[in-house]
Structures are given as structure tokens and as C-alpha cells.
Length: 101
Image 1 (cartoon, rainbow, N blue to C red):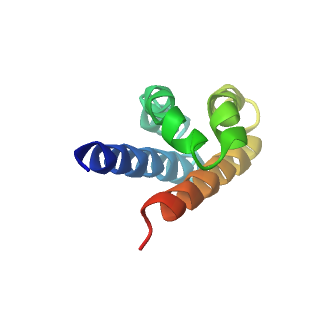
Image 2 (image 1 turned 180 degrees about the vertical axis):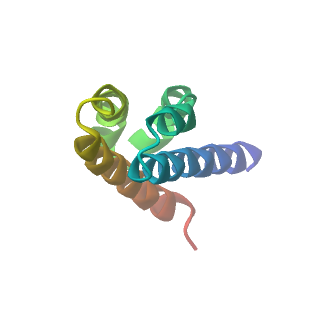
Image 3 (image 1 turned 90 degrees about the horizontal axis):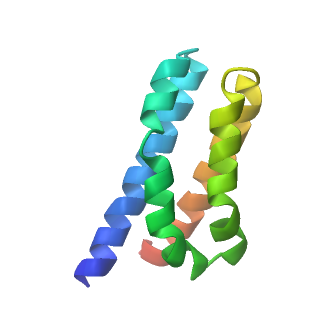
């Protein structure tokens, strides 16, 4: 049960990072968005087995989507914002499936 709680916290922290990056990107603060996502890759790697238990496709492409977000911020911030919203929504669905009451 402790491991489950720790995974839930990790997932919630990832959602906060993604939402913070969305806010910063919408505010034209690219540096702030990049800082918000600075630890997200490691979190996604840690969460991969958990996400895979409910959505293998999402688990397989989370890091790729994060790379698209980070690489597109400078040249295509609108695309990065769409990708951020998609990744956030997908992970939020995982959170609801696994931990929702």
C-alpha cells in the first residue's frame, strides 16, 4: 500500500509539472515551462510500469511526447501546448482509473 501511495504521489507531481508548464507556455515564459519539465522525464520513466498496467500505448510514447514538447517549445510553442494538454489528459485518465474513488 505504501508503494501504491508513492506511485500516486509521483503521478500527481507529474501532473502538476505538466500543468505548470502549460501555464508558463501560455504566458510566453519558455524558460519557466522548461524548468517546470526539468524532472518530468525521470518521473515518466519511474511511472512507466504503472502506466503500462492500464495503457501500454501511452506508456510507450510518454517520453517521445515529452521530447516533442521540449523540442518544439522554441519553434512551435502552439504545438508543444497541444502535446502538453494531450499528455496531461492521458495521465489524468490513468490517475482516475488507478486511484479514483
